Image (cartoon, rainbow, N blue to C red; front, side, top):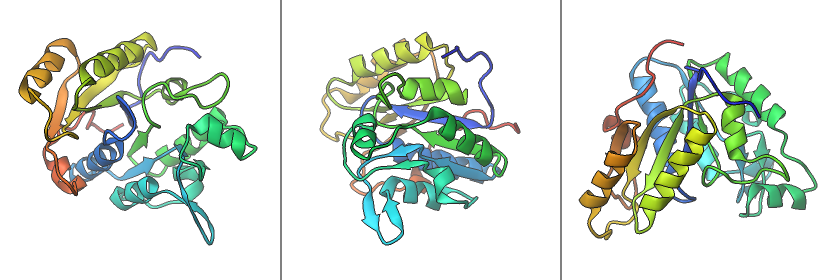
Length: 234
């Protein structure tokens, strides 16, 4: 997989320090913020696991939230090319379903979305290097889509190492970081301000916002507190 040199201004790739750190919330907030800035938007979740079976297929709550936050509505197989029922790693879910996750299929879906919206916000799976098959992982996908990366840091004990290792991995792939978001997922985290300051000192990319803990977070409120990156016309 070749290194990215000139990241696309068509959108962002949202990754996280782990699963459950608020990637969907931040992705929806970015969609809301872009829309407020006058852009047409669409969210994309290339691979989703833990989906629920419904009458016409599989549905993922994260995908539904992304669709709700988008200004452009389109066919589901573009927004979510791969959906799996088991809540396990994508390569395992794909193997159990007797299929293979093809990066080229995801790339074609992404390009189709760039034709119908100004900005495409692509939400990754789990952390930055989640396997998609025997060879490729989500870092390879980020390179293939050639998008600047937004890192969501789940602020809790252990996040410093997770965040800094992820930043190193993003740089090692030749990818540009659009910025990072500190999401306070643990309201009882000790020394929150000191941990935040430690990350600010060590991460060169801009801090786009700090998301306060809420039992029921709202993407619109979060969007109002974000510094939106790459807001120019593509």
